[in-house]
Length: 344
Image 1: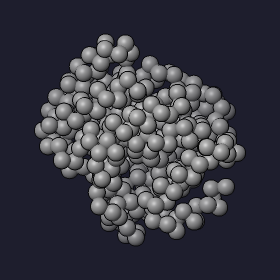
Image 2: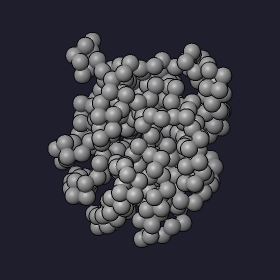
Image 3: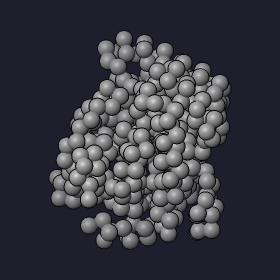
Image 4: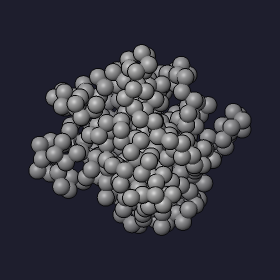
């Protein structure tokens, strides 16, 4: 059905279409209609970060920034859902327009800037939801928090979401918050991860449960940066790494309409860059911690490629905009078939 609806959605401003789609999903959920349109993947459970995922295909952060649509999204067959990025205080994000389709390249450029209602609003939404599956909550810093005080924001976020998350994602790689990617530097990352790990240990004792931490990194890193990040992730006993966020590269889209817009590029042009990053990370980590692969997955074959490069799980976002929700079950089935030797 999505191929019939897509031209209408693509005739609208991308951000308007985004909100319209989420509201439509919410209404369809309320009236019990979603099972008519969403194919449920078969169970293909796997244990990653100490959590049992019903299938390896998740929703990436950014689609549901405030955790307001959890119950509707849960009906689409995802093995896990990641919400956010959320910041300690509400913020409007960057000025509009800030979201652009590059349909010819099956790509998106966004410079949203962590627009969200703040962590307290997200927590209330999560508490109201009936969803009891694997929930990742992605945390970041407010745009006006000095980069040298960034750890304060991450610690606030971690404390507030800890009791409500299956895992917490640490977003240090968005290109749309000034200087945020500096946190991927060796000294800055070393200090941040040390504080987060110490806080995680205290919270685990306080709440009587261990909530894994996964660090989300950029695709625009050289081999030495990857080596240093992998070493620090292992040293500080992080539980997972999400590879990757959007790219600043415009290779292959620079001459398309909107191709020169500032922000992070996602979708098909990110696929190979993200997969190469996963492969290099896997070589450095040597299975010390799992990789969640995200970036440019628009088919089951793309999902398999991420798994074969070294990812334990995958996440979708931009691919849903171009392919619709059938992509979830397609990717889950492709991964299951490939790992059971039945891929044709």
